[in-house]
Image (cartoon, rainbow, N blue to C red):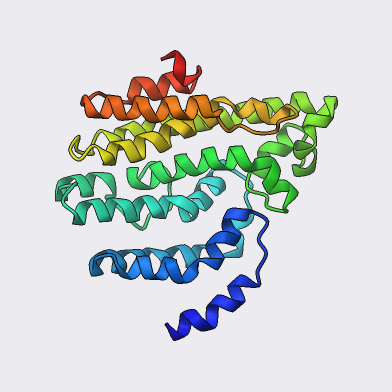
Length: 272
């Protein structure tokens, strides 16, 4: 508690650009309280993986993103590690067997895509989040996309951010975003391989990850909208509500979410 009291004023003085981050910093005591209500082994798992994340973010080379491999490595520390935390938690709670845990994360410390499915799911969801926030991130000085792929399209981060206002850059930006979409689609589809390992009962597990995956699929499909005046790939509320209800219905009937995910990557969810 003494550490929280000393740290809280310093965090409250920070002013991150995103409102959600500001709110999180100011609610640190509540976050710590919730953490201590978790089972001791879950706390230990979170602390262990948090150290891995911190060491990764402390590596300045991590933000020097030139290639897709570099990008996936950064996503590992952003969200792939969270996938490992969730997998360990589900295993400890008995939702995954020892064999399933080994199948989903055979080499937990690997940063590479394609080694641990638990990591790949986190990377996929982070990819969609990055696509949705790409313009805002650049405007805030955060450069997350592979630099070499931008250069190959005759773009810089700045010209990508301004492409909705510049006809000359818009065509090149559209080609770059389409390239990113083609990288993201198979990762989003592959999330269903993980979902299928989850039990149907309690169906909240499939609802949780299925809903997140479907929202990500919608964002990936809407990525070209970043070049419109709206500059957002977020789905409309109509689609969010449809996805929520459809995922719950499919899960409660023990049905595979794979076809719904594949559909939503190409067409509005409500057409499924």
